Length: 160
Image (cartoon, rainbow, N blue to C red):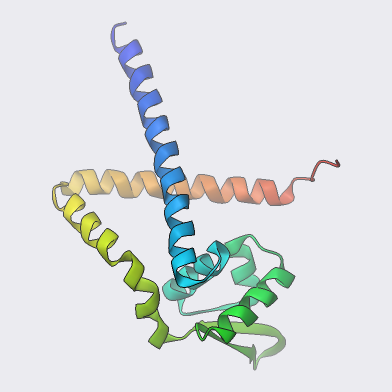
């Protein structure tokens, strides 16, 4: 019985820490985007392309939770800034393939360098089991976010 209050307290602490980490992550993303002269959606698009190389405009829209029209504007902005190229898919001319320009990757990585160094030092002290737990936790959180995004995208918007 004595574990129950301790467990409730630990759960509350974990939830608070998660919310604060999420909040600070968003503030950090906005600061990085501002430093680069981008929007957070632009940054999310570029992060996605840095991971996958190329993607269709539809995939970018899904990943950034933007409409295809908003993605079209974003791609134009990122092309103009020299971050991406956009070519029609030769197999289906209706599709636009967006590709990160490799020579611009370093520009995107630079604002994260110090944080990446701190992160490396932080995880040096973790055991393999601890890192495995964290990877599993983040994977489960990602699945929950994706499920909720699907639900929110399918939900009707309340009329004002």
